[in-house]
Length: 509
Ligand code: HEM
Image (tube, rainbow, N blue to C red; front, side, top):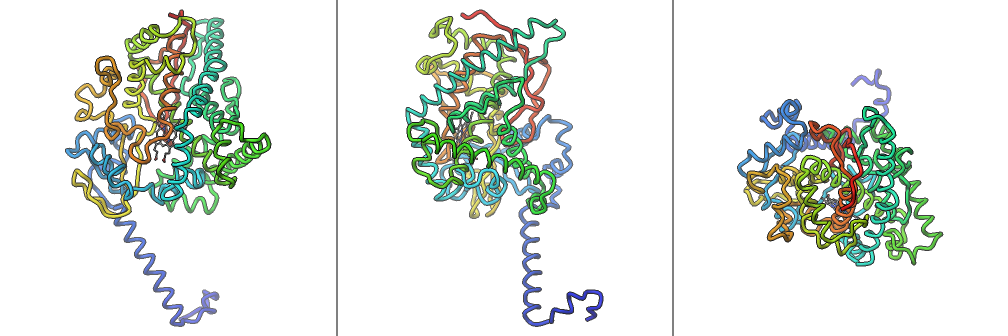
């Protein structure tokens, strides 16, 4: 062999060892290629994969999730395969029960998911499986299930509504009164809810207020970094192969460079918060960080726990509220029925309902559940099969396959909710005026089984308290009623362009 043009090769002797390693490397590459081809089937030319790859679904549907809902409705089993993504998607409640409960151990989040969110979430509960998850789950359910935490959360939501949300609405109305009707600018309700829920979850998680509710100020550095990091992490999941983002991360390029910068900022701020809490003394505090500090000494782990909670509780509540107010703006009769119900238990001058009053309002509760059915904040959620399996609808699942249940599509299935499934009808949740829950496997908006959302009750109470305070005091109309929701890519459902509304005051009744 001539080594002249490759002098570095000259230093290598063709020894059995060299031959062995070359063969091993080639064999590994070949096996990897076979695995990728087997799992992803990038050549697949079935209708679904072709439509996905060419994005031609967009000519008929506003959103990818609407196209998936259409395919799932058409599928006799309620399950479809997107071979090029190695993804089996289901809207079949029996399958959901199987994945989330009966064969829970076979469907962890998996390494793929933890790789995608690992840089942002570290070892936090959202990104954990096995013993680490069990430990955090036990500790978090003790905390979140306690009466003192629940009343602390309710207190925070109430005080944020009274001191920030209502004054903000009043000031927007006062400003719009001083303008000509043509000069009135719509308010982006989604932006308000995102600011509100960030402040609320930060107060709940660390007892500190980042002060996002001042609309004239830019969002706090922390909120901006957090938004960027969740969006950029979600974008990793959308690349054709994980290799793409992994190489970009290695070279610190483009979106991966921005993600690294955002995470660095989050880390600095989280470290500050933890240090402050230690200095202030945490034992007498009610916030989650202080409570976790009692049993966790490792600051890195504390950071991961707290960041997971921020992610869990921030965008989800804002997204739920945005969906609810969009539906109310299209269904004034439902809004009126909520006011009538509230008038039966609340004093006309009362701005925020008490916990006891909220508990008696079954119609309001049904309206919140109905809005979550049509606009679930987490539109889909994936697991990865550890071993080969067969789902109850006889779908074969090969080891390593991504299996996704799809609450957005499930809320729009005629076979689950009847022919009026696309209607916003809180009455479907009531029996004789009393809220009647449905199976969580038919309505997996908060997931179900051993990993069911730990903040479910907190979230629903917060949504009801905010909605009630706003509905009673203001008329809130969509600025453009011909507008159709389009979602932006991200971990949580977000309306692209926000939810522009026009608001006016109404007399309390
Ligand atoms: C409407 C609001 C909310 C919705 C729709 C929602 C939905 C969900 C869903 C679908 C999951 C499963 C995610 C997964 O495993 O990939 C989840 C998990 C979780 N949620 Fe929520 N959530 C909401 C609000 C909250 C709030 C306010 C908190 C805390 C204050 C919270 C805490 C958690 C935690 C800690 C987990 C992880 C549970 C585990 O892995 O064992 N959530 N939530």
